[in-house]
Structures are given as structure tokens and as C-alpha cells.
Image (tube, rainbow over all chains, first blue to last red):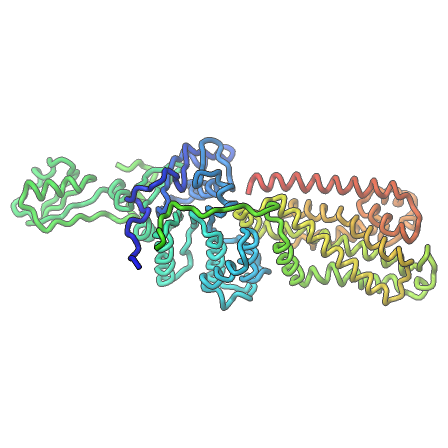
Length: 314
Length: 263
């Protein structure tokens, strides 16, 4: 038995096919006078784990609805695994876990999953497996209305995973989970992604986006304002700081170095702030006797605030 | 041994008939039977009404057609039960929309038209059960009908109750309430009075008797009782049923289209 190959279809791997998991091309959606989505273009590769961030009303939900075929764009094109969203949904290529609702309280847990299996043309054994995998065996016979919020959320997951979708869309997936629950949840999601499942999640927990997403997409006022790895987005929004030990440095000289926005000298320690910290670090290591280099970024929350505030980020 | 390439997608197929399956109907039936209110409303209440209003000594002895007045009341009450059952079957969509279930179903291969078809089949199944329960109670409680009328009255009442399945669907899409049957129950009772189901239209006076002929319950009652009474204008009744079915079905389609466009 060989260990699992590390070359997953993650952000760095070159996919052997051009087929994007998600392809949004200049998508616009208006509701009356309000433009909820204002020209979003986004390509997501199979196996990517993408966090969708943005303030309320930024257009995240509308974007997700269009991916699921629940809304139709007024302009632009949406395709999911090369198909129209609704066809992709019907084929079980894409499924979603919504934060609330979507359950009938007078069905039992097992019946709810069984109905989903019936609709997707899966055998009853698939439903039983899904119940077990979701850790719901003990409450299988319980009415959904009598289940706790956490159990209902697991039920939504069991339903979403039943068609074994290529793309899973999650809306605030860990709301209400405790720390251990969240950790287990993300471990499971990362395992799925390693096997090729594409995951898009909208979240307010910025540290989750930071820790678990291959890619972070910031949406604001219906547009993508930042798109990259969490590290890139953080750097883009607020720059990073290179800290090094460099005795005898002069602040004014350092500030003139290319890429440095701001320099600070504290004794033997220098702090250089800028967007392209890689270049700054390279300069320090090749042109100066600097040592003990450390590159730190501000956290994603700062980036979030910078990117979603009304002022344009400087 | 296995290659774990993410790009090999398994073959995926769509279900036949847009997701209209016996499996779904079975699960939905089970859920409906779990709802005590539905069971009492649609199965027990019409039979109880029959026992209260149709089984007095006079009614049992008074002959009518090939049977007795008790049998006449029984057919009316069976129609009433079928109406309640089919209406509440159709009105289920209201609760399901309120719970976000309709939206959840949009994330499955189930086609909206197949969903409606499932609801109609369910409405007709519980309508049939309602008629059967009433007839069994009636048979033991002194209702007399000619043998063929037992079958014909039951079948006609049941089939014509389709108009109320359409009515229930229309109302289910129109009313956002979770307790849509609490509104529709009294409405059906009023319509039943107006349509001569509880009291023969002749006893309502000339004006009301004329109005009655245009209300949606009238046609169903007339047709269902015809095998027993051989009385009344069957054509007029048929026009009534067809016209109201068309009105309610058109209304349901109109709301249904709006609903699927938006959700």
C-alpha cells in the first residue's frame, strides 16, 4: 500500500484537465435597483478549498445561490463542472449545507436521509451509511423537530454528502460548534478535499479561513476585492513586517530601500514594513549582515477590515 | 492499486420521471399519517359528523333512491372528508415552503412538476382513505345504498375531490401560514354549506339555491350522489367541477411558477 500522493489538486498542483469546478464569468445579479453581484469572475479548480469572505450584504449568498441554480444571473455566465448550475445540482455534482431551515420536523432523521437517497436514485444502504458516517445512528429514529441544533446540522451534512458531490458549498458551517467540534469538522473537510472534493465555504470566523482555506476570496459590494492565499490576501491588505537584527542600521537609509514603506530601528533590531516583504528579506540577507529574520503579517481580521471598509486600502 | 486522481468523475445520471417515485410517496404518506391533526381532520371528523347528523331513526327509515337518507348523508360526508383530505394534501406545500424544505428539494434532482405530481397523488390517496373510512363506518351504522351505488358514489366523490387537491395547492402557494388548514377548514365548511353538501340546496331558498350552483362544492356533491338519487342536472354539475378545477389549477400554476422563479 502506498502512502497517499501529496500532489493533490490543491492550489499549487497543475490540474490535468481544463475543467474548472466553478467558473463565474462577469456575473451580475440585480434585485430591482440593488445590484447584489456586480461583475464577479472567478475560476475555482477541482480540489481547492476556498473561503468566501465579506461583510453582510456583500453578495456572498447571492453568488452561492447562483452556483446552486437557485438564482439566475442577469448577465454573465455561471458553470459548475462545465454544466449549468441546476444540471450540476440534479446530477449531484454540487450540493450545499445551509445554515438554517431546509428540514421538516415531522420526518425522522433516517427518513430525511432516505428521502434524499430516493431522490438521488441511491439505494437504501447508501442512506444508512450516510446516517452512520454523520454519527446519527443513535438518533436515526428521532423526529427532526426533537433533534438538537448540532444534530440537525449533522443531518444537513449527511444529506449534502449523500450524492457524493464534487463540489460542496457550506454556509457558515461551524456556527454553534465548540472548538473540538470545529477541529474535527475541518479535519474531515480537509480529508475530503485531499480526495479531490472542492469546497467553498462562507464564514465569519476569519481564523478558519486562515487555517483551512487554500484560497481566500474577499467579496465586497458585489465585487471580488481580493483573491489569493490567506497569506497573500493579508499582505495585500495590510502589508507585512520584516524584523531582523542589524546592528548600526540607520532608519533613513532603510526607508529608501525598494519595497519598504516604513522603517523603524529599535536598538539592534530593525522593523521594515512593506507589501513585498520577500524582496525586502532578500535584500537584507544578500546585501547586509542582517540575521534572525522574521516575517510577520497582521492577521486576516485586519485584512478583512481593511478590505471591507469604505475607504480603499492604501 | 487505485489511482486517486480527482479528475475522474463517476458516471452520474438523472432519476427517471423527474424524481417522481413510489419511494418518495411512501415516505410522505408515513409523515402525513404521523400528523395527528391530519388524521383527525380527514379520517375521523367526517365519520363523526356522519354519525351525529345522519343516523337518526327517521333518516334510517326514510327511503331515498335505492337506499335511505342515512346513506345520502353518508355520501355527502364522504365527499366532505375527501375534500378535507385532498385540500390538506395540497396545502402541505405551504408548510414545506415555510420550513425551507421546498428550497432544500431544489437542491435535489426532483423536478418541481414531479413534486406537484407527488402532492396530488398523496392528496388522492388520503382522499380515498377518507372515503373508505366513512363508508365502513356508514355500513355499520345503518346507511343503505344499492350495491353499485356504494362503488359509484365512492369513486365519483373521490375523483371529483381532485378539484380540492388543486384548491389546496393553490392555497398552499398563496398562503404563507404554517397553519394553513386552520384557515382552510372553516372555509371548506362554509363552502360545504353553500354548495348543498350539509343541507340540500332546495332548503336554502331560491336565491341561495341559485348561488349554490356556482360554488365549488356543489358539483362534487351532485355528481357523487347521482348514482343514489338519479336526480339533478349532471351536466351543470360536471361544468361546475371542470370550471373550478381549471380555476384552481390555473391559480396553483401561476403561484407555482412565481415560486420556482424566485426561490
